[in-house]
Length: 394
Figure (tube, rainbow, N blue to C red):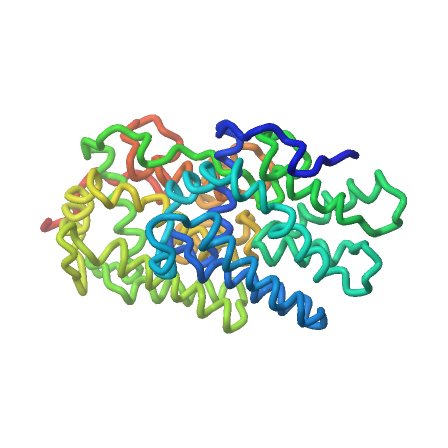
């Protein structure tokens, strides 16, 4: 199997397939689910590399940090003066646009020094000009890539050579270069950062008229999240959901902490605030629907997929970019959805029938649930059968 160096690729044109790759990289780099990437995310890559290869030469330790700093300040984030980029945050659209601007310029020109040489040499601990599978996986995983896909790609490259379980720096460069410079999503490296994102963005939906079907969906969601069936939504409901998920998935402490933080973020950032940034301690069903109706066509709509991504990250316990049947069932049962109903919706969301739900499949349904008004949509029962009748007394 032949892979080309970065310099051999023609200019990237910004084909939809390439955009899908960059959207996917953005989601993986945004490991905390904040909806943006910043210099901290690139320093996190350096930290993960240094932890994985703790016995590497000190020279490479310094170099990998310098590379990540330069990649952010000098290549990707070029908005404003350099001293302002420390606090800069790029959302998905801004990140893709930044990559589009630098991919044929600084990123390509410095690709070998930033993305190849330092990482390869650092992983090549025995200095034989070759790296093994676990070393290759360590690099990809530090970049928030998919270790299982990394293993598959490594085996493909290794099978075409004669190094018996190792690959050369040229082969390594070819693998990474194909992902960033080949606009064809059918390449062998296309899923190196996980399943490619292709869901319909909130910006692509028309203005929501908030008709009876939409209102019924919001009512259904409210009642699912109202764990105690008190007729009011409180932070405590989300705390209970978080605890239930942690217990059902037998999470270790740091994963349970991260899950609880995600649930608190969902309450604080998406439900307990109105369009004027006022915060509530509790919401009735009527207030909940009224509040969403007042925000759905404003700035809130641009956060809907991020809202869904936060939920997805909370359920994707292993961080693979996929939700298993068990993980999905645990989520649904956390807010009182029966097993049969949960398994039925899982089959609807699993559009490619591979037995798992990708982030793309999940977010397609999520965004459609909030912004779509088609009464025949298969996703309208995402939180259960649509409830058209208001709660008594509201």
